[in-house]
Length: 344
Image 1 (tube, one colour):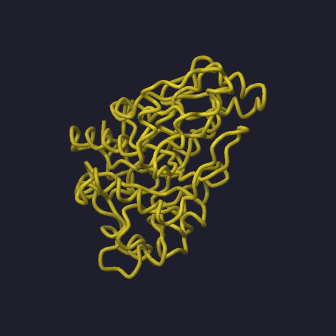
Image 2 (spheres, rainbow, N blue to C red; image 1 turned 60 degrees about the vertical axis):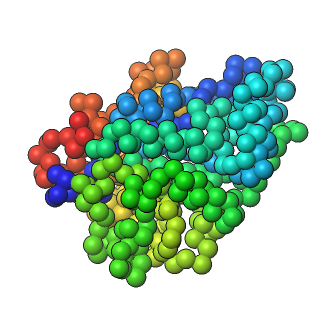
C-alpha cells in the first residue's frame, strides 16, 4: 500500500472545530435568550486534541484569531454579562502575544488549547509518538469578525502579516521534513495545480507520519495569504481554491449539493475535505443521509462533530465501518487495498 498508493488515495475522518469546549451554562442561557437557533448550532464540544487523535481522527480544524500584543481576548464580555469570574490561568494564557484559538470571541471562546502554538505542540508530540499515522490534515478558519456582544472585542484583520505569523508559528514547531507543503508537492512543475493533475501527490509511504495544513477561507483571505505568489511558493499551507487556480490542490466542499463536484475533483487528483454533519442538525434528527453520501463521495477527509454520539440528542455518530481509521478511497481504485484498512 505504501508504495502503490498516493496520499490522496485514502478515506479518513476528522473532527470539526476540534479545539472547542462546551459553553458555560450561564453564557449559553444568554445565547438561548438572544438567539435560540444560534444556541442550538453552538451546543457541542470535543475532548482534547491528543484524545481525538488517539481515537482515530486524522483531520483537525482550528479557528484562529490574531493577537500580536496579547491580552485582546483575555476578558470575554460574555463572562461579564453572565456574572462569571475570569479564571486567572485563562487571563495569563490569553495575555501572552501570539495567535489564539477560539470559535466566537466573547461567547464561544473556550478551547482545549488556547494558543495556536500550544495546539501545534500537542499535535507534533502525538505525531512523533505515532510515526506511521495516516497524513493528518489541519484546516484553519482565520477569523476577523466583529463581536456579536455589545461591548465585546472585535477581531483584528487577518492580513498578510497575520498569515506570516501563522506560518512562523508552524515553522517553530514542525520541521520542514515533517510537513506536506505546496513546494514539496509542486516540485519542478510550473504550478501546484499542474503537479497535482499531472504527477499527483506524494506516495502514501512518504506521507505517513506527516502533517498538511490548509487555510479554509474565502477569496479575500486566500489573496492575503498568497500575496504575489502564483503557487504558494515558500508558504507552509495549502489554500481552499477553485479548480482553475494555479495554487489549486486542496478544496473544501462542505455541502450535500457539492457531492457530484467532489467526485469529479477527487478523480482529477485534488484532495477534498467535507463534512458529515453541521450545526447539530443531523445529530438532533438522527439523520445519516448526509454522512452516508459524503463517505461515498470520494472526499479524502470527512469531518464530524460526532465521532461519539451525544445522547442528549440521539445515537447519531460518524465513523468508518469496522472502526477503521483510514481505508482505501472509494473512487480511486479501491481494489488496490483488497478491503484491508490502510490504518486499522
